[in-house]
Length: 234
Ligand code: SF4
Figure 1: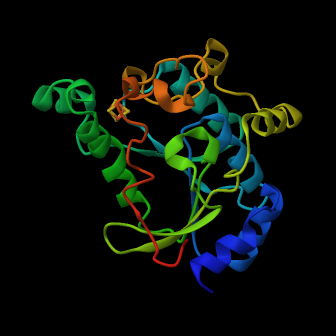
Figure 2: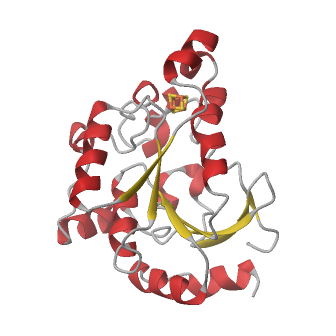
Figure 3: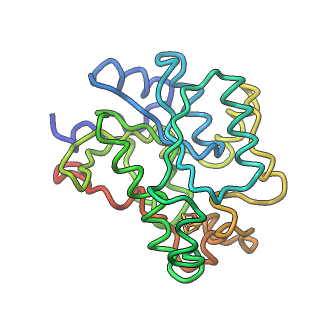
């Protein structure tokens, strides 16, 4: 079946049913990428019913907020997660010794070294890639599909599944409250989108929720744009 058919068929499904059906109809090893923001935690909450030990790929850039690391560790213990920390080839100290503060001088390169390259390597064994991406998150995500065929730079193909693609903020927080999912404390401080500390600020009122990232100079780190969508995946 083509990627286009798959996406159309799954569009509009409630996330729990979508996940159940995707897992029933698609074979192969699955993983989830999770930055421990609320959407990723919801998809993880749903997935754990079927795949209790699904690998949770966390991009450990070395630049996260202390609160993010503490929350990651707390939830990993609480949910007994199969956490996989993905690290760059160089430590933060080595990178800064060679290039200085790349997040200031060349954030694109910093993201590539600390996020994109480690993730592309880590995704190689998988056929199913779950995410907590939503269309409303950013202007760069308005065309996001619930299912997309992706091809990594190596040529490896996998199915990317975005069960919350159509959800708005209210649905997200309602689900978290209904299911008692503790969230990253930084939301309460006014951060609607949380990444590495040097590149995360509070956006102006009414602005794109991700506009506080990278000082508004870009909206994506590259991990969701480096892989190529399949020709048939609308
Ligand atoms: Fe570097 Fe900032 Fe990208 Fe994190 S978000 S990898 S600190 S540029």
